[in-house]
Amino acid sequence: DIQMTQSPSPLSASVGDRVTITCRASQSVSSFLNWYQQKPGKAPNLLIYAASSLQSGVPSRFSGSGSGTDFTLTISSLQPEDFATYYCQQSYSIPWTFGQGTRVEI
Amino acid sequence: QVQLQQWGAGLLKPSETLSLTCAVYGGSFSGYYYNWIRQSPRKGLEWIGTINDSETTNYNPSLKNRITISVDTSNNQFSLKLSFVTAADTAVYYCARGRLRDFVLWGQGTLVTVSS
Image (cartoon, rainbow over all chains, first blue to last red; front, side):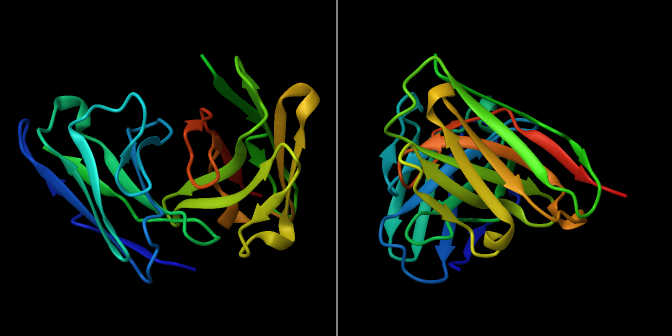
């Protein structure tokens, strides 16, 4: 299985900050990398697919980049509703696997 | 507005079979991939398996011997059965729909507890 490792965790930030979350794969996943946001008691919500494509309805302050083994999720200006846990997920080979999550907190 | 609604037993004894069903309301059923994913404090988010409307399945090898995922296209539903459950299967189980490689639309989640 491909192991996904996220850093940092947790991440302390303030409203208006530019925030970057890193995800590293144990082997190359090309650009088959997705990002999700999860709030307490809710299901995850897809933000970015194929490493850099913004899912419909997701604010443009979210962006993704990277390929191979190293990926980043950037929030350009953190909003109060962005305090949540973020997960990366590889979709290069089955079984699809997730990172352990990065909690963004005040 | 397309929604996924899931249901099933929330409390099981060891060795019993977990059974969950997820229904798609408000949109087309065909052309998508339907998944089961679980989340626990111990293992985080774990993909269980997927099925499409042609009944093609892919399962997580770690669970493959115990899983059955099926689809009922006439009722826009898909189901998960996980046999011989243990405490390690205690988790919140989600159904999710997506394209082949992602999970776009999620159900509300079902907490399944395995305890004697």
